[in-house]
Amino acid sequence: MNFTSGKYQIIFLVTVMVYLLIHLVTLTSYPLPWYDETYMAAIGKAFLETGRFTKTVAYFTDTPTEDLRYGPMYFIVAAFVFKVLGFGIFQFRLIAFIAGIFTFWLSLKIYFTEKNNVLIAWCIIAVLAIDSFYFRCMHEGRMDLLASCFMLTAHLFILKVFHLNKKDKTILKALFIAGFFAAISLLTSPRLGFALPLLFIYLLGFFIFKNPSLLLKALISFLLPFVSIYSIWIFYAFGGYTHFINFYIENLGYTRLNGYPFYFPKQQIPLLAICIISVFLGVLQKKGNYFTPLSIMALINIASYYLVVYDNGPYASLIYPYLYIIIFINFEGSFWKEASEKIFKTSN
Image (cartoon, rainbow, N blue to C red; front, top):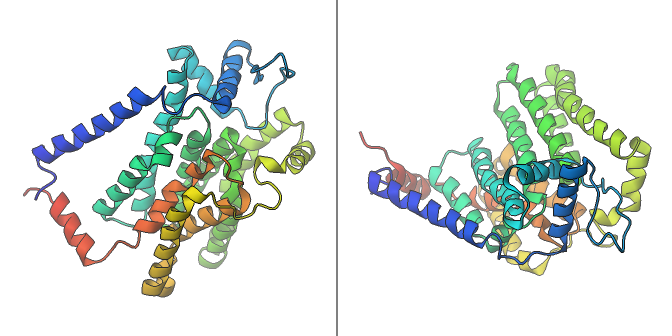
């Protein structure tokens, strides 16, 4: 069976086209528009018309002040889409839909930083694409998937650092790009910062123990774009770090409500159970060799998410790529290698 033949390529393309068509046809009808979407769309439209991030929904019951807690990127993108395509639910939800498609590609790239089984890689994307929760998230006018795209890009370049030659100057370039996209992600939604402290500690430990000669340059390469870009927004929106910190101390519920660390929505429990079993079996089989940069990156993101983020909405989309990567990275061995070779073998 040669899946690289013309017949199977056509089947694959038709499947992809049908999948995209289902999304586009149902984009405006599933789910029904709800408050968050109208709120976000109104800010994007206000920015297009006035250049300010003003909340205009229910303006007769609330003061139409600027809402600066999220960051500017999502509303800038929304304003651009409205300017080019017009204002409407289809145009607005296209942002999440296109961002969701990009998360598939980024998940592939992240998997391939360490693994090379094409069959497993496409299994990850297939289950992510048909997951009903993720399908719905790709239809919602929220910034989560766009922010996730930027942060996954940062993670991709961080993972590349672990596999580059320690004397390779491209390490510094990769860290600079990672710092840039991490800042852009936080400017899309500060909620995406949930894993950054632990990831930074992990990255710091790597350079201290594995590549100390580059430690200072590595810190500068990552922090320079990250701190400088995000600081511009902090001073614009909050007037400085003191007001910025005080705002989030007073609005802890934006990330996690008191008393809800490691809160798991019941609909996520089956997937999390499979994920935990997968980690247990992986450690049992590979011992310490299980903990590679890819698995550590995934586990840090998953654990940090449930510690920091109070999940009462569609926020779990931020870690779904890692949940499926964690599950499938154990699918190795001769069976999967032989199956992959048979399915994706090339003609001589």
